[in-house]
Every structure is written in structure tokens, then in C-alpha cells.
Image: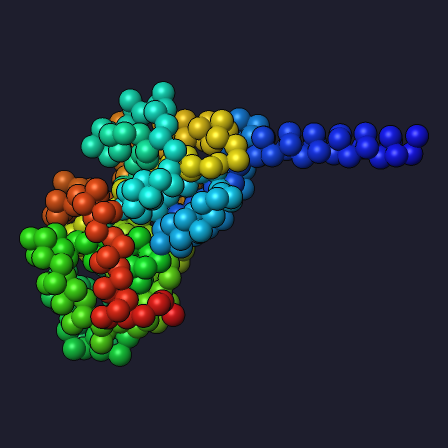
Amino acid sequence: MRPLAIALVAILLAAGCSTARRDKITVACGASERWCAMMVKRFSDATGVEADFVRLSSGEALERIKAARARQEFDVWHGGPADSYVAAKSQGLLEPYASAKSGEIRPEWADREHAWSGIYAGVLAFCNNTKELAKRGMKPIRSWRELLDRRLRGGGVALAHPATSGTAYTTLWTHVELNGGDQEAALGYLRDLHPNVLRYNSSGSAAAVQAAKGEAAVGVVFSHDCVAAQEQGYPNLEVTFPREGTGYELGGLAVLAGAHNPGSARRYVDWALSGASQRLGPLVQFYALPTNTGVPAHSKAADPATVKLVPYDVEVAGRAKQALVGRFGAEIAGPPG
């Protein structure tokens, strides 16, 4: 009887593990830690599906997803600029899914083949520490050219590395667009900026923290990251936008090819695209623009009507990413420190 009992226990345990696996998803999350934690909790509360997350910058997420292609560790990718989702789609890493909620999303902010959908949008900005700039005899930065000022030498500018950070790649591609598609000119600008950079962070939002704490005089970030830092008790911060024009991120959302739990991954996408989900960001000081047409922008979100935006083509930027980031690493700065 003992061998039979052991066998039955083993079968029951295996069944239990299988059921738990079917009722759980893991999310690779590319936004702020607080936003990620809130999103997976609210999804679990709404659906009963257990969910957890790993916070990863978009470049890190893409590499992890690619490395685990044969045995995928994530079910859903949520947040982080869509350029990386375009790159992932081209490598067969995403599972197309036409959600019933897709019709509520602005059509220009989603993949036409349903490989990914836009979930929020954020505008690239300067996060100015007015006190630190004043020490250097400077006012808040309002121009990409001003960012090259010699008074910012020695670490005056906080910036991330485009190999790991979607924010930094948005910065790089913004300069491609500002120069009429000329990648050489874009790399030339960032080469000129290099002596002013404090260090190349792995995460884009870290630049807002560095500016807030006075480690740098100005950070290049998405505006909602700087607003969040302001609300966390740093009154010397001021958000400005470059007068020449600026780029923007379209935060992505996708079911991953090889997901262990594709059914619940699709439920997560349905939930995340909904108006109820897209209203949650301000609860954790996340003021990006919603992509659901039924959700109004928060008053603290960047207003695209008042900011000069470059014609940022996410598809073209995504296809160019690998080669352009490779050149940045080889010609300007090695891996982030």
C-alpha cells in the first residue's frame, strides 16, 4: 500500500502544481515599480488569477525574453516603449492577440497585426533641478543645444543607456527624427553630449531621481517621471520640453510566444486595455497619457497640443534599434554603469 499511496500523493501534487500554474501569470513589467505592483494586484483582484511581475527596463526585458525563447519565463510584457516590442515581433517573440478591447484603443497607437498594443504614452522632457542649475549660472534647459553647454561638464546631465533603457533609445531616435532620418547626425549629437553625462544608467527613470537629489543638474526623462519625483517631495524640480521638438514613448503590451498560461495572459491584456485599468495610474503618481479613448488625460499629464513633437515612427525606430544601439555602444559608451 505504501508505494501506491506515494504514487497517489505524487499524482495529486502534480495535479495541484499544474492547476496553480494554469491560474498564475508572470509579467515582465517596464514601468515604475509601484505601477507594476498595483497593476498585477488589481488584475488579480478583478479576475482571481494570481499574478506577479519582474521589473525590467525595455532593453533588459527584450534580452531576457529572447534568451528564454525555448522555455519562456514570462506570460505578458507590459510597459516600456513599443520600439522594443517591434523588435520582439520581428524575432517571433510575441503572440498576436486581437482583444475585444482593441476597438477602445486609438488605432494609431497599436500594431495593425495585433502583435502588441499601446497602453500609455509619455513625452520626453527635461527634468530640471533649478537649484543645481543656478549654481552653474544656468536657467532651466529648454533646448537640446543648451544641454551641450560646457557648464554642464562633469556630470551635469543624467541619462540612461539605450541598450537597456527605452527612455534613452527614445532620446536617440528623437535625434534621428530631428535630423531628417540622419543616424550619423544623431550619433554625433550624443557624442557631443557625452562629456556632460554623469553616467549611463540602466533605467531611464533613474535620471529623474538623480536630478531630484542634486546628483545631476538636469535629467532627460519622460515628463511623468519628473512629475512623480516632484510629488515625492522635491520642490526644486521643473519640467520643460525642448523647443526644437521632442519624441515620445508608446508603452506597449503583449502576450509572449511560449507563455505558460496563454489564456490568462490574454485575460490580462483585456483587463489592461480597459478604461478601468487605464484610470489607475494617478493612484501611484503615474501621469502618462491613456490610450483608451474613453479615458481622459490627467491634468498633470503632458499635453501634446502644447508640446512640439517629432513625427516619431515606432515601427521604423523598432526595426533600426539593434544596429543603432550597437553603434552607440561601440562608438560612444560601453554598457551602462
